[in-house]
Image (tube, rainbow, N blue to C red):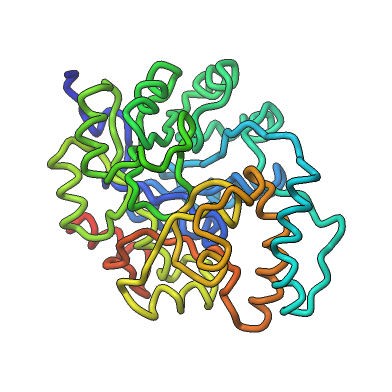
Length: 347
């Protein structure tokens, strides 16, 4: 197995990447993490090109430290009117309960994959790192990004995915254990039975690839960071530990759900987007089924349930909110991102 050197590819003081977390952060958190010695990340999968550029301008004006942009790279399925109508019928009782009319032509799903248009918009910035979820873009796009001097990372949830990513241009692999909050990075399988703990996944991946491996999932304390390094990871990616920090934009309802019990029940569900993702269990997950064949394909499942979410949140309820969260909230604290980072790194 090839000898790896951490400092040769991740040019940060600390070997900690802040996980990109759409909906609970913007560039403010990424800036704080990068300034404190980690690698701050901006989630771009739900942003317009214009908003991505605004975030890039903010982070490049605020810090000269490395940062990461994260994009989805899924294939967009055709919009299935019949399946969407069936899903809308399944949700109809909740619309009635909330006294909300179902929009007949709601805004389409905003989770768009990385594209040439996005590459055009960000090329001038030559971002030092770009991470992908759900595989990699096409070969031409990968080569274009690499031509900027950008380091490409991508998420693997199985050994097969890790091997595929290395063969197709990834410079580092994010080994996403089943403990991780948010969307699973699955792209070669949709079988949840294949998903491993971060410990088991790292052990298997490091023996099958030569690129650096980043541990992600359930890593919320300094002890867990150290454990990841002991089994072969060269860096860790941490998300949940930052959910309550000062720079996060996590909603009051989401924060309250995390704080209500530090060992809250999380589960994997597809009811919010159409793809498996881990979050705090709430009413929608319990009543619609954690993973249901009724949900439209990603990203269209979100169109109608987002309407319910908005109405319920206005009434102070998180019944229909995707409360993304990992299995471990041990490191969640209402302090600065810098303090969380330093505690994770024991510095």
